[in-house]
Length: 219
Image (cartoon, rainbow, N blue to C red; front, top):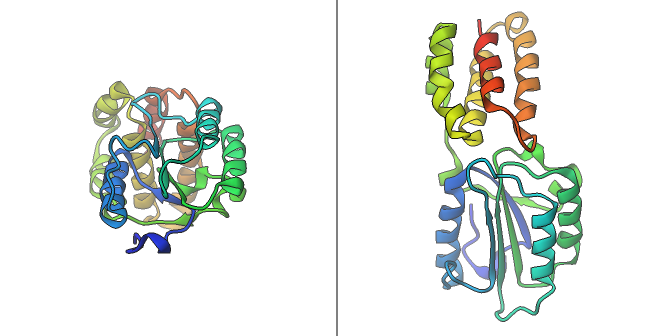
């Protein structure tokens, strides 16, 4: 949970969540720090739009440039809400994490912690917010019961919207459902699904192809 006092905050956190998580985080920060986040010149945000959810090297450099400017207030906040962070951008962030001054609070919101490099993750404390805890298990259970043509129909809206967060939820919930099967049945399927899942974090994946692959793999 979020610390109750400003002095109890660590320098940097990661949060597993989606698009709604940043708004929930900002509300909590406003309560604790007694300051407005919206319009605050000491707040730097990245909140990728649909189809542009990758925090890349250019964004990392922009953040580093912003940090090079003198802070106007006692506390400064970086809120990065992203679906994916390429390794080169993470390495750039690593330097920022090592050199950030006192009073700087960095929050990196990602859909899954395994996309963070171990060297980056080791410098971040995990923070959990109620708004970030969502489950698609029920949807996945229904998904598995559908025929292949029905599954293909169901994924059309996700692919059309280019919603990687929704796609990831479906992949993860499907894997969770498959783990309920006997080991000999679930193991080969999960291996293949995890291969497809890994491509969600590519810079420009084809959600249609990945979701179709998930649909057709299911028993």
